[in-house]
Image (cartoon, rainbow, N blue to C red; front, side, top):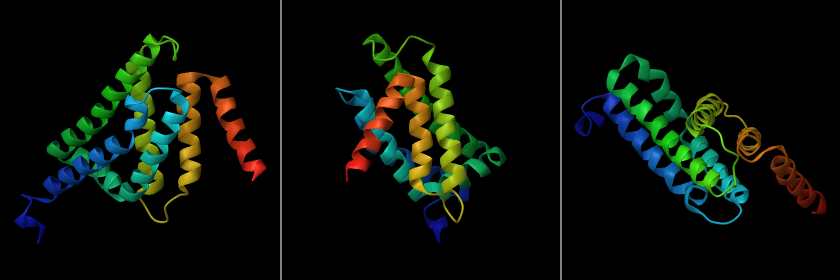
Length: 168
């Protein structure tokens, strides 16, 4: 039935990937455009990214697994990753200019962070049974916060979280 709307299966997969990208962009806007303490904004964005990735994990896995075998799909996957890498690079550079993040070459770090995210969610959410969202989010948060804002920010972030959990 899908052939009525799509030329072939890879065309449908490209369309679904664009939808996933739009959903992730919409829910991660807090960190990319927000003002104020960047760590809570990052936590909010990454939490929502994990939620969307959990929901669409099988699509992400199917596209990334099929991409090397179809030129159009491979380009779509590469563009998907590049778009997020461009956005993260830009945000890192903005926050470096504000003194919120130490100076380093932002693009390779953005690439590493995004490829880590893509591989983790694809691996943990792209098959059944799916992994626990909380443990995947915890790993992603720890790497992003430590990498961008330093170990002291990481300790502060997770000690506040533990204190609020202990008080309940």
